[in-house]
Image (cartoon, rainbow, N blue to C red; front, side, top):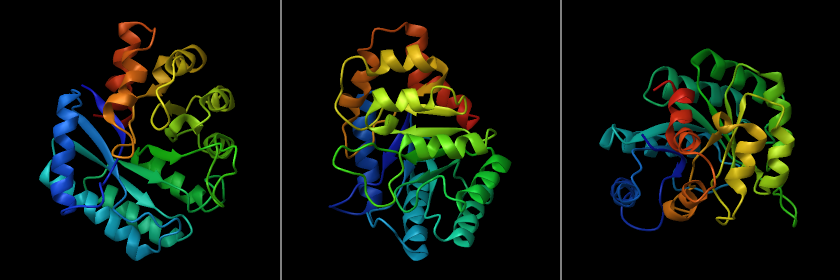
Length: 250
């Protein structure tokens, strides 16, 4: 099984339902079996709870249409702690979602994240955190691998996914190397030679997962980082799907 751990609801044309069916046509061409889906069509950096609920409802409708293909990740804004905990219950405890997605509304090592992580541990829900290191400077509350390393050390029972491997993956891998509950994913950024090989060498193949960040990036360009890597077929199978099967308890 090939699992893409990082996919978003498409924007710009038709209905979200139409667009999510269309995206599967391209996933089929690349042999992708399951896709972890999060966010709606809003790209507000600090969305309120109405936008959060609407975004998660878009994902829910995609899950209802394609239950054998999409895996829901519950989008949260930790600035609204009570609302976030309510969404975790609505989407994961009482619903079909399996994980949590955090973007740029708050640095992920802030105290508001602790109750969210505690609930994630109770539900065995992995947390996919967008991270980036930008030479031009991050967005005001955009997390880096250092932020994720701090929260992961506080919550060793939670499986964290280092979104985009921090953008600057050569630094990202070094920052999280000694933290076993952080998994690096390869999505976003250009398909550079050596990225996946370095991840396997520094973290071990069990801590590396495939993601695309589609539709912002293409399935093919991101999968090429794994398919073209100079690694064993066994390690390739782990990265493309087996690790996410384990993390999600599939």
